[in-house]
Image (cartoon, rainbow, N blue to C red; front, side, top):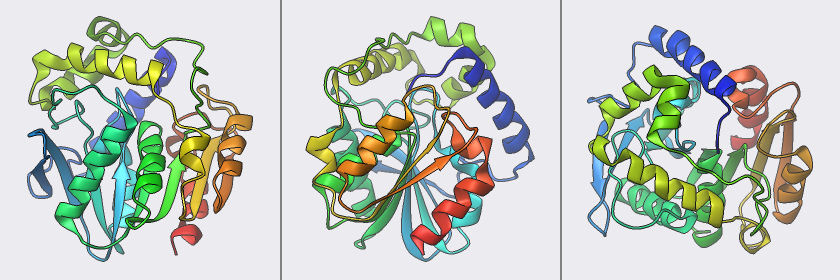
Length: 275
């Protein structure tokens, strides 16, 4: 989902403060990082931490990457095998040649997960990653035993009022230093603009709604801040009501990146759900 300039600045400030104190370079860790080559030849980067039952983390879009999950990884890896997958065009993953869709992202995640474990998994997705998690749970019920979807409401076809129009120029003007570090990770930095164009099409044309929600068979924790600027609380409630086995958690006083706003509250909701 798109960020306002203010939220992007807050994200950059948080990342600098928190990740700068963290000795583990999440998202660029040669000890934990590996590549998986998909069926179409695209190489996706992922990192694995801890041991135990597998839990998959799917990050947000545009600015999002594995490192945004730092507070989750450090706690979850105490009891789980945490699998962090980098989406096409983000961080150290390649773009590939095909248009971006939620179906594609679900297929990509499925291939990476199955290359690591034959077991069913718990999925935690944020924003774009939550929509990918919805799709993954719907088309692979044998794979996803529980889903935590943060910051992703009902998104029916034709509902987007403001069209996405990301460009390298606009993002660099908003937070140049932040995206400079992102570009340093990319295996194809010269194709960043191409990747953003594909993301614009994804955001403007793809959708996740009843056709997906009603097929999800596993328990789902739907979570959002009550001040999220990208969807309404009503939209989050609508998504939850269309999912047969859903629970709803609204974190008061928080916007889109709710786990930066109030991680203790987020964790208190997630912990009993995954147990």
